[in-house]
Structures are given as structure tokens and as C-alpha cells.
Amino acid sequence: MRERLVIALAAIAALLLAYNLYHIFLVLPDEAAQGAIYRIIFFHVPAAITAFTGFFVTLVLSIMYLISGNLRYDSLAASVTEVGVVFACVNLVTGMIWARIIWGIWWTWDARLTSMLVCVLIYSGYLMLRRAIDEPTQRARLSAALSIFGFADVILVWKSIQWFRTQHPSPVLSIRTGGGNIDPAMEHMLYLNFLAILMIAAALVLVRTRQETMAREIDSLRRLANAA
Amino acid sequence: MRSLLQALSIARKDLTVELRTKESLNAAIAFSVVMLLLFSFAFDPAADVTREIAAGLLWIVFAFSGALIFNRAFVRELPNDCLDVLLSSPISPASLLLGKAAAIFVLLLFLEAISLVVFGVFYNLRWWLRPIELALVCILASWGISILGAVFGALTVNLRLRELMLPVIIYPILIPLLIAAVELTDTLFRNQPLSPDQLLWGRLLVVFDVVFTALALALAEAILVN
Amino acid sequence: MLLSAMDTRNFTFMFYGFLAAWLIVLIYIVSLARRGARLKKELEQVRNLVSSKHP
View (cartoon, helix red, strand yellow):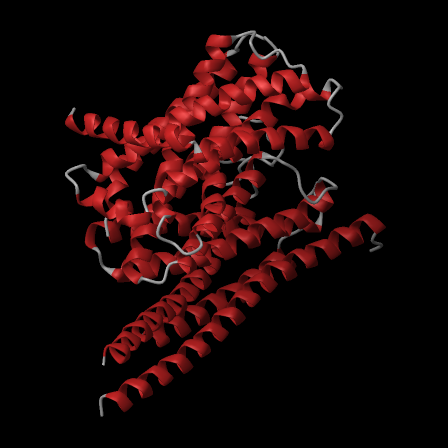
């Protein structure tokens, strides 16, 4: 059942991506000021939103784990965080390549770059903590607590670093600006690609959660073997 | 009220132990002097550069040598299963965490006072121009470091790799606090008036302390009780 | 249409950007697949172990 869901998700995502890529490269024109390179935004921004969606979902799952004590929430939280970190890295790397052309530098200590880096560090810490604990319920409890602290901190990091002057281009999505900053065709494409990337992320999460369940099964079987 | 008294008794116990053995305090002070010495090789200590980066350096010293203090807070309870005894006593996990944080807080402030004097002497820095505001910044920022130090000390206390995990987890989370503390301290060292922009940093410190203290108290049980 | 040197560089970097994005996702998928294969093998072994102890 789950296998089929993964394959279906991946297939739809692939189709959507093919459609998106065709439009991004062949239909949409170059941007006036930036030329061809602006197309990176179609992966850069959706990757960031996917990562943050992931971190938020982890927060919710962690709270649900602490309330219910159901290890399923914990497996799901771990998987979502891991996929979130991957897409945060995609966001950082594509951003750096874009910056090399537009700003002439790979990295600058601008608000959003720094915030994203801090997020990657916090959630990498979460993943490392999970590896350092062997006992499943202890791991679930402690990592759930860490993810709640981490998410609270992400908000503060965001605010605090924003108060430094920022070099990053301002938001382009019209839900944040009230429209006018971006060509509607491009914004439409941005949302479509967000959908595609979100589906890929969901497929990855499903695969990863299956592995967590397997690891738990191995663990309990091992105990059974040792107890006998 | 009763839980506050319990927290106080934990703090008093920790401080008494620390004053008798001075194990973490000595190490932390020695480490901060070593760091101040190392900085003198990293840049030209005579130049105006010192004044430019003094605030940042100091908070790096506080945060790093503070790690030697909050690292010990819960590890100290491991021999003879003291932690299990504390947890099975009538003291609530939240009070235990609060008491530990209070003890760390006092030690951290003491460490900061000594580091400030040493820094002033070594680098010819006039840090005493705005003593009350500086004390306020130190108190607010140190409480944030203490409560998070206690939380993550408790979180990692039972791990094999706790010495490795603690800094990896805690420093990214301390970033907003350190930015705010550095910004404010820098202004105070220059003896400039605090603009509304900088008061924003003060507010951030308060928010940081309140949010993480509340979270720590709410999650104390999840963190400490097996 | 003649492309200037700047435009070519712009274009190459766009290519690098897309390459990098998919490369990261691909590396993750490969690591995921390897972990999955390892877990499957381990599960098999442990199952055999258990069934040999509890025939």
C-alpha cells in the first residue's frame, strides 16, 4: 500500500516537474535585470518553503509525540526533519550559485542566508542527537524536546538577524507583498514547482519513515533474541 | 511558591558543592584567561581593533567558558546515582531544572566579573563606563545561557557522547541571545546612548529568557523523567 | 543571436544551480536506498536469528 503511494507520488511529481521544466526553460523569457540565472528561483524558493514546512511539521509531530507517547509520530518527525535539512541544503547551495553571478560573491552574512544556515545547524544537531541515543523512547522524548526548543529558536533567529541590514532580495510572492513584484506567469510557475518539490519531499518522507519502522522492528526482534 | 523554595534549595546545594570543590569554576576561569591570551595572537591587541571587537570577544569567552560550568551541572549528579535520587525525591523536575539553572547563573556572573577585570587589564579596555546597564545586559544574557545550559545539560547527561553533543546543540540555539548581548555591550563599551533600535535588542533578550524559561519548565518532565 | 561573455557565464551558472539542486537530492536518495538495503538485510538476519532460537 505504502509502496504504491510512494510510486504514485513520485510519478505525479515527475510528470509535473517535466511540465514545469519545459515551461521554465522554454516558455518563460529571461528576466530583464538578471538574465537566465533568475530561473534558479524556481527551485531556490520552493526548496526553502518545503524545508520550513518540514520544520513546522516536525514541531507539531514532536508535541503530538510528547502528548501521546506514540512512537509513530517520532519516526515521522525524524523523517520529516531529515528531508527538511536536505531541502534547506538545496536552498543554500542554489542561493550561493545565484549570488556568485548577481552579487559576485558566494556568501554574504545577510539575514536570510545566516538564518537558513542556523536552521541547518540546529536541525543537524537534532539528527546527530538521534544517532547518539540507542533507546527508542528516550530518543523520541529527548529529540521531541529539542525540536520544540529548536523551532522556538528559529523564530527568534529569524527576527534577530533580520534587524541587521539585509541584502537579500525582498519577498516576491504576492501573498506577502500584495502583488506587483513578480510577473504572474512566473509566480504561477513558482507555486507549481513548490507543489512538485513538496510531492518529492513527501515521497522521501514516506520511504524514510518505512525505514524507521524497520529499524524499530529490528530492535525489538533483537531484544527478543537476546532475552531468549 | 513551594516549588520555588525547592529550586532554591537545589541551587544552594549546588553552590555549596561548587564552593567546596571549585572544580568547574577554577577550570572555567582558567579557560577564559587562556582564551583572552589566545585572542592577543589572533589580532593586534594594541590597535583600535580591540575596541571594535571587544564586545564580541567577551561574549565568546563567556559562552565558551560557561560551557565548562553548565556541562558539570548534571554530570556532577551521575556518580552514586544522585540524579535518580533527586528525581525520585518530592522535588519536581521543573524545580530541579530551575535550581540547576540558578546555580549556573550565579557561577556564570562570577566568571563574567572576573573575565571583565582581566580583559580590562590585558587589553586596556574601559568597560566600567556604564556599570548598571552593563550589569543588566550580563544578567539577562547570562540567565538565557544558564537556563539553556541546564536544559541541554539535562538532555545530554545520559548520553555516551554528551561532551560532543552539548556544544553542537547549544551554540546554534544561543545565537540570537549572543547577537543581542554583543550589540548592547558594544554600545555600552563605546559609552554611546542606547537608541530605540538597541532597546529592541534588550527586548529580544527579555523575550528569549521568558520563552526559554517557560519552555524549560513545561518540558522539564519530558527531558528528565525516564 | 550573439551571446556576450557575461551572458554565457550567467547561463552556465544557471545550469550549475539546477545540477547542484538535483545532485543533492540524488545523493540523498542514494543514501536512502543504501540504508534501506542495509536495514532489509539486517531484518532478515535478525529474523533468522530469532526463528533459530524459537523454532
